[in-house]
Amino acid sequence: QVQLVESGGGLVQAGGSLRLSCAASGRTFRMRGMGWFRQVPGKERESVAAISRSGDSTDYADSVKGRFTISRDNAKNTVYLQMNSLKSEDTAVYYCAAKGLTRNLYDYWGQGTQVTVSS
Image (cartoon, rainbow, N blue to C red; front, side, top):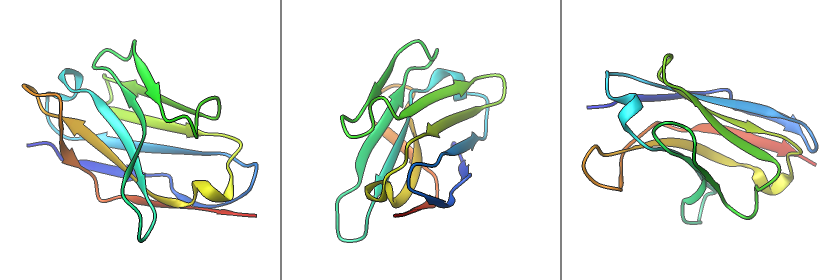
């Protein structure tokens, strides 16, 4: 089992920055691909960014490319999402997720953290 706890959300003005953190429990963090997702009420959850187990490969949604950066610190069991040049459309609940050890699916999810961007 993996427990994920997000932090760092809040209210920010458009053009500002926030850094989200996701702390994972257990000893298998470095063996799992990680991702950040977001969801707005009434809409489906969407993938924002993903990072490989070692951190040498990342992927981003087109809507956040050039503005968001995903990174991880395997020594601290933590994955980050640096969000710059925030827009009102980035307002959502942000979730981190961990992939399973034997399959390429996200099996574990955090509780989410609210990000609100005021225009």
